[in-house]
Length: 314
Length: 314
Image (cartoon, rainbow over all chains, first blue to last red; front, side, top):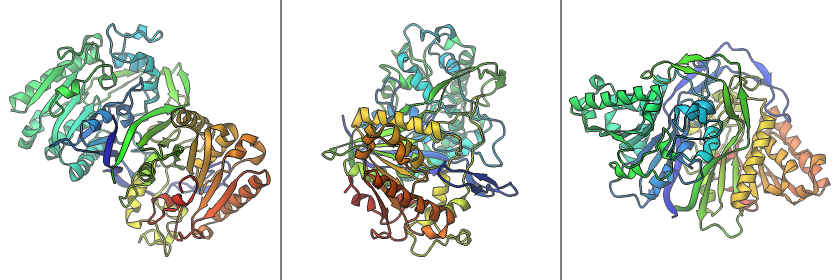
């Protein structure tokens, strides 16, 4: 089914100006056909911004909030576009359903750019191996990697696994503050264009999402946290956060990995502590909802239309 | 005016598998809420792929070739989306005119990802300063940077200059071979979906574009080279390249910078040498076409509809 867009575009939001002085000039060649050029790294840079690409469908579903799609660690907004087996991803599906969508590349990833100035971030960038993704995303047991044998009943499109690996980008582990700050700026931009957002965050994206819940709940119409690896801090939440419904969504096979069984307990604890303070939080286990076989990459999987069973998408 | 899309999606094309062994395992924390995790960098990676985001408008203009938009050095595909002063960019305009469009993030940039494995690329990534962009892109004289005073008559939307700077990403100078290889893979993907492409390349993007002209002219319906900093090698071109029309497009203020006056002479030489071998190449100087005041960032400027005077866009 075709979709019609009233508008489309992108922006960079947040970040800060960085001025470098005292660094040596060095000759470089931009291409083989250009003469040596004196590259002077001294001057002004913009760093720690996030990138947002927005799509506004017509007709917009009546009352539909904008949806912000925030990837997890080592990924970019590309993860929402096309599934590894070539089907239209959640971005297309949400537009077809009439939701304005903003797809984010967080600080350091994708079109947001990373800081490679003479005053770079601490630490170094890390890239996930295919093997780590195979097991950490719970596609299959480590021993199944070589033959691409997933867990029995897995919904992940295993034949496209290498296309998922091609999406991986490096990540730093010391950029959490910058990411939380840029996400506030992104959501202010979303609010300006389309109103308070439902923030759909995945995995490491949850860390920044819940910091926004504390800092600027007015920018949020809800949070759908897909297996987040960051959690809210209920004592740090003001009364405005009580108007923000939160759904934690968990896939299958959580007991196969100690990291995930631990995070699963953290989700339970978060829901309990939020409920004690009167915040509307729920945990959804996809197997209970009729979607067994879902992995950490649930948004790419086969027959996983569960988003449409969650407010406000239902 | 709204646009209607029959399809939309993305892919990663080209690149190679890289296997790392013998690197030390180290504990990392993915987020503040996760326990230390033994990050093992040994395993398989995919590196040196490019990213393509495609849009297929309906109706497609009869006979319209797909258009590939290829950024220059230190930029990503975001440069074609929204101009620094917030107007719809060439991507939107081409879709509205009925051309399928593929927007590329080249190897190392944006959603293509960069190689940060334990066997990284040689050299280090460089980021352009705002000052360098101001003068190298011929927005204005170096002395005009502080007050944002452009060359007289400049069409660049100067009030949005900082939004242009926010788009900059780091670049390596040793990835030319990988970029040329990935661009062939991208164009094969474009061909499979939409046919041979008109490749619109900017600046450093020209280096890879003209290598594709030599390697796989069958994938090209034409090249529009916007102030390229790479050039064709006529003796290296086969007869199939003679069917590929080439337009070199140059902006104003070329005499203000020795790099650009030199590249301008290279363009003249390229056109002459291509013509001697019977290849259909032309040089278009935008001031002569009625667009004085154009800079290196001509695709973002005010009142620069020149693309529609060039085949096949006219």
